[in-house]
Image (tube, rainbow, N blue to C red; front, side):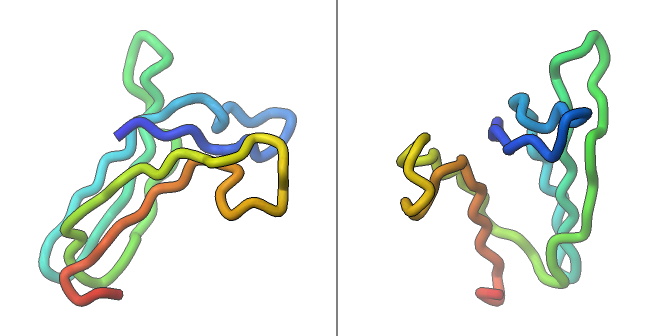
Length: 85
């Protein structure tokens, strides 16, 4: 699932498009962000998302690029779990 994330600082390349990889089981879900902009796939970040199974993942595009009062000024990723957590 490709998603753009906002930059975290002057030295950050996180604003580039990345591949989100979700690994899940009944008791744990792990999310990894992988850069596809190099000759080799590069792991950017990996974190535990929840203690239950993630059943769906969807990217939600931003609805505004200039108005900070809008609900989604950046692309977001929504995940749903088996236990609705």
